[in-house]
Image 1 (spheres, helix red, strand yellow):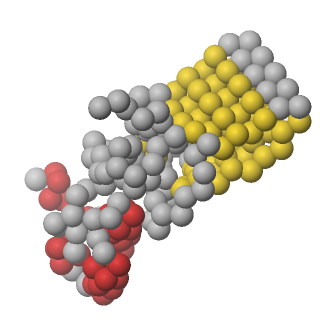
Image 2 (image 1 turned 180 degrees about the vertical axis):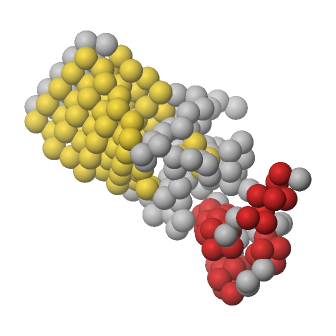
Length: 201
């Protein structure tokens, strides 16, 4: 009864935004052709009844917590956090280490400071915020490793001074996929961005 009441109270425009987001994610994961995506997107923008709106995506896999659809490239996967997203997260390692891996919930904005220490971020099983995630990484006599799964767009910019910023992941341009923006500063240190290691079959 509670779920029904929630469904009745939710504004249709909010529901419409969620349906359109599902369409974008399914298109990004090759569950829809261009024609199917455009047709459903037009339908989702026009209907004014909630049940009719849900009909648009009822036969598609849900991109939410616990769902891990196949991503571009096959082996690796990305999951979207469709719930509440924190706005700020600070990760500091001074003469120490700081690590995030497994299932975790990154904030929209992540600030990293590694001074004579190391920070490891593994997004392979993370539930990323929809849209954009911003990482500001400062590395001074330390190291930062960031693992980015397939199915994610990536933009890396930065300034190395007697250090290095290495992007082994490369650029991605997947429509509707989440995007990680990394702004890096490395002084006598290294920041490495790379895809997950391929699993042996």
